[in-house]
Length: 284
Ligand SMILES: Cc1cc2nc3c(=O)[nH]c(=O)nc-3n(C[C@H](O)[C@H](O)[C@H](O)COP(=O)(O)OP(=O)(O)OC[C@H]3O[C@@H](n4cnc5c(N)ncnc54)[C@H](O)[C@@H]3O)c2cc1C
Image 1 (cartoon, rainbow, N blue to C red):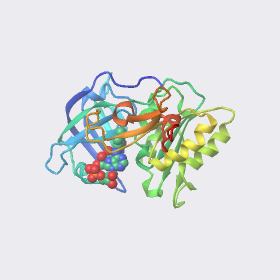
Image 2: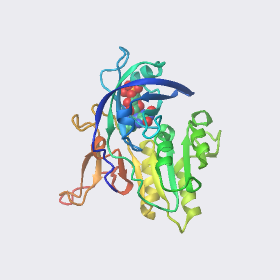
Image 3: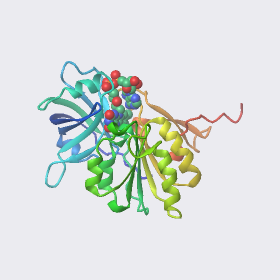
């Protein structure tokens, strides 16, 4: 995987331009923040903190749904978010004009340099968030991009209009069968890999940990190049709090594995490097 780490991170004061409710507790907030919008890449993230009294003390991490504004360079970032606690509840109250502390771009972005036959977006729930931006940045033409979107039910299928507008093949799975296949996005992935064989697509994944674990079992044995954008709670976003660790394979480490900070080395990791079960030391 190429570097993908932004050479420069800035701390900026962003202005809320709009905050659209999508239903089911999800919103898209648009922030005017040219210093960050002009540099950010898909799966980089920002740390956001509202300056309003209702916002928690620590900032919260968010990837970028898309960028917009400006004739030559983007001036705005859009963030798709789900209300899950006090920070996102405070964000849902923004109506426009609020000032927001914004630190970014942070982390490692998706590597968009490959020219594989097809690009597949494997999304679970709010994990759909980084993909509209990624879809626009890839070399793969939209007719060879495929979205596999798994959600709880039809009411939790956000942002499909973005992918429809790009002409991307959309395949859906819902837990309750209210839309698309009854099942999950990894089942869709298994079927798709059979369908595309002998071609091997590149897979970009974002969603909950159970989805990543299931996806690894499908892609790693088949040698399908897969980049996973992981999520973990994080307080700083740049490695100071050491709170967001993930065990990864590392042949150069004494035991063949080590902990990586998701905020600094990730959030994007190659699927075959992520270890959900730590190897037993050879001398024990
Ligand atoms: C790199 C990165 C990118 C992210 N991008 C997005 C995005 O685009 N859209 C989006 O809606 N969310 C995203 N998240 C998750 C988002 O940061 C959390 O939902 C948010 O911090 C919750 O803040 P809160 O104060 O509302 O909830 P809290 O009160 O802090 O927590 C409420 C609940 O959410 C859980 N939670 C909090 N943070 C996380 C997390 N990072 N991962 C998993 N569970 C968490 C807590 O364990 C708790 O159960 C991202 C996280 C990371 C690390």
